[in-house]
Image (cartoon, rainbow, N blue to C red; front, side, top):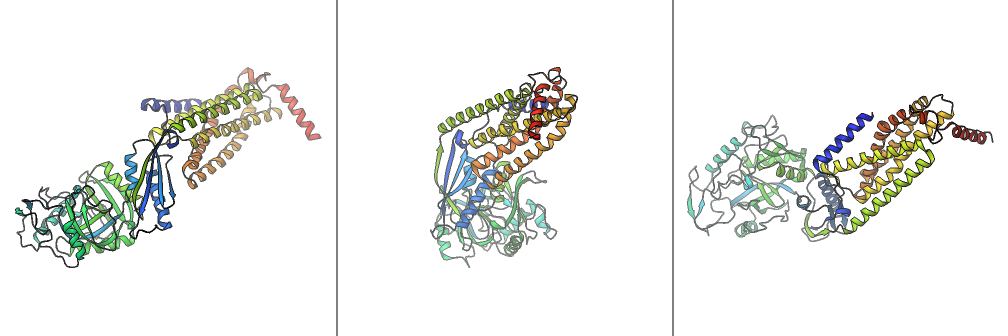
Length: 570
């Protein structure tokens, strides 16, 4: 057991040395970080419902925890949400929590290039399929680009349902063929193959497109919107019950979109993965039962419509990230966003969708950098108090148990080494950040660890007083009886730590994590170090013969036994 423990310590030490992670990462209170205040924005300008705020807090907390950032705090402050993120340069986390990931699926009613330029290359009105499939011909003219940001949505291409059409299962190539066929069905009177012709800047972007059923206000806004502006509509209020004008996320196209037919709340799961046939990164979506029905109705409606109304817009936070052509009515409730993703961008979008769409729109009220000056003083004080506490425990063990106390001191030393290496490894590889609540939990664990040694030592003494002839037999019998008590005590402590960790947040959860971690380390040290070391000590003459300084001397044991017997008789 000692060799196994030594191998474990060496492996952890080598990991720390190779990664040069000798100092653990610190939390917000020790290393500083960023504090972000999010202010909700509602359609009517009134205060948001309490239920919506609570749900937003839960979702943002899940998102932040999903990034692996430890010791972060998400809490309400009146009608605002305050997020505290430890460390510096947390741009990715800030982007994650600020993005509402409010996804809608809408039918496209009209589409045009983002901004008409003099002598711009034009095609038939249906050709602008910026969100067509990835395999569409990569024409550079406005209105023939493959997709905004190169993304496409292939319904039921991954894990297709048995009822999916062959075209839907044919992958990107079928989407490209469908897109070409759609171009030939336009009502603009153009030839089936796209032709290039000069187009004046003042041409109507809706020329040749069916405007029936479109709100006149949307038509006016569509003609006036400039998607090449810096904000180009990002984060615009997206009312699912009304039509809207939106830009593509790469500023290449503008759309008039119908009411939302499927909302992001109907997504049951989202995951990033690699397509087997192309090896590209995609985001796979699965809808809930109601969402699956809505998705089937939407794809069927679009499939039976003329271009560009045969396109489905995927709207994320007010921007169109994809608008593919519908190849048929898709059942089964599965769809896929593909094209132009890296592993990082696919995972980011999947996380945003997986942890849920926020029920409210938010704007960043303030972003502040928190200094670590005060935290360093607190860290120094915490380390000093921990060192003093450890010193007091060591002195007590040596005075009370004498030579036997050396076993306890050695066990505390090993527990300290294992704890330090564990914290360093978790900090480097699991996003763990050491904060003051963690340090408090580690300091308190000194007493928990010492308790286990004391239980075992006292049981050994009891066995000697009961008349065991040799120390070896007393050590073994005492261990069989003491380990049950140690395991029960540690189990109770660990259960308390787990319950506290899941029910609490912030600093209290950090304290619970440290307490649970050190409880597990206590079990490892007692079973793999203290017991084997006691077995070795029992073979030494110094302990076996009961030297006066061993803490197991026969004279002291007999005096203690006589005193106890006298008390019992009294």
